[in-house]
Image 1 (cartoon, rainbow, N blue to C red):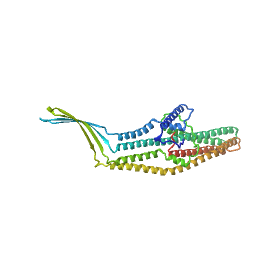
Image 2: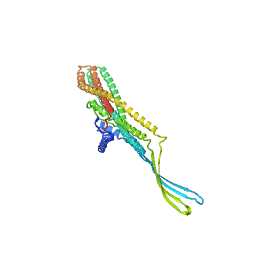
Image 3: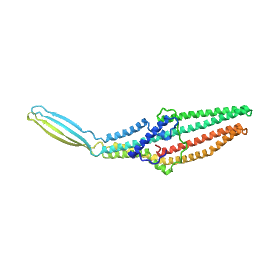
Image 4: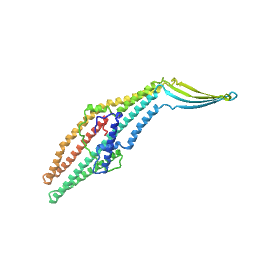
Length: 425
């Protein structure tokens, strides 16, 4: 599932988003069909898509994005215009009445609201990148749980084969005992081996049930008849280190930090315009009631400027500078650690994969031959019981050891995807 070339989430074209949505719907449909059909097993891609398409996860990610988008809109908005009516009345022989109806609007001459709005939009895009980083972490965890199920399924098959071999040997001993060619000790010894094998098998079945439950918990489904299908050993070695480093440079969390640095810079620009006053424009109607002399009407105009004397946005400037400093520091720390971690993870993944592949090739044929030779030799009286049991145990141990190595190689491969920030379907 490693994909090293993908457009940044903040710049994905509409067509790309549409195709991703269609593929996700298809995958979810396939997953539903596979769950309803016991003959089909879920694949790695299907379980990842199902985990990422859960409604609560989608609501959480979209909600975080909507919060930041709403804040951006709120800080960008101009204050509403104000309508005021005032009546002034004097009494007596020369009393008069005056009416004022005005409309006032405040204008931001420094465009601070616009800059804060741009900063809010940058934080909204950062929230989108945070959502993608969260999805990548979930995808990696789901893949680990998926391959745990694949691993335990394979271990159950190996131990079932061991139990089957012991059962077959018991049948051979029973026939030899009837002919007087085998001692009761051989049968008792095999019955003990059978109990050990079946105990180990039940232990692995219990582990498989737990691993399946842990995977199902991330899929958000009540299905309990879970079957998965996948190759435990990675298909190929990881990409070259230069390509991995290039992919890691576009990690969503790094992009989110960069966007937050941009947002802090915009907030700092807005704070640096503390000297630009707000302009208040006012216009309206004035009516004067002169009593016996009649009434006269007119208009009024006004303009006022706020004087930036006490508040010079020093607090806002310090906040913006601190936010930028924090984001730059976090980004630098992450970038400095990534190269070393990737180099080590790639070396581990390559070595583990090749070792697992070589071990499987070397032991598969040899183990099969040992079981065949030992079974035929024991039935023919040429080999003893200990040789037969040693062949059975050795075959099971080799298979289980190969599975351990393959799981370690797969986990190392998933860790590389986590470090590079790829792995989404």
